[in-house]
Length: 246
Image (tube, rainbow, N blue to C red):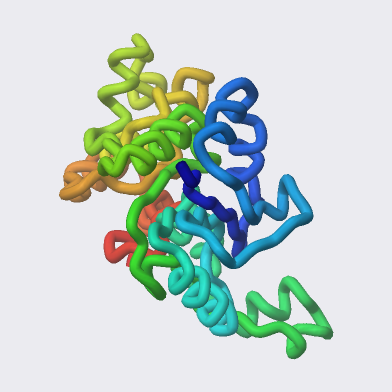
């Protein structure tokens, strides 16, 4: 039986989500037994445009990126957005709230005119995306779960409840009670509340749950002394492309 052919591609990103795939450890062997990886710049020199499943990491930050992404979409039977930059636009969307000429000059200085840029967006704003694996970086176990579901012809079951649920399961003290602020009440779970468990806060890297109670979250943040701009910036860190952050 012919194994599905899998390819990995990257646009504007740190490529940390692809590194998570490389670091699957023993699970990597099981994945390689089930699929043929035909393109993966992080891990191999070979390249092929004959593939069934394409995993795309990174956001689209240049108009010239669109043609390459559309070609990937044309070749793939299934396209999966890999990580926050690909599912949400990610941290790269922060530049969308500044003048793009200023951003370009700030980064490239005198050579700014040599570099194109436009408002950052996730791949789904350019082409149809079949499935999304959230996170910054992605969760390795969730990646293998999604691959298994795709190979079985099933729709991957991605959580659609807030990180707060996983915080309760982990026995964490709510960070609001510790004097900090958190995006957990409106952020999609699936990370095992790892950031809060390690003593930090939820930054919202997995994006908003469906129909989030945004007004309630704004009220909670406001009661902790945050201004309207502070609140918007909380949403804009990862979800700057979404309507809620505009």
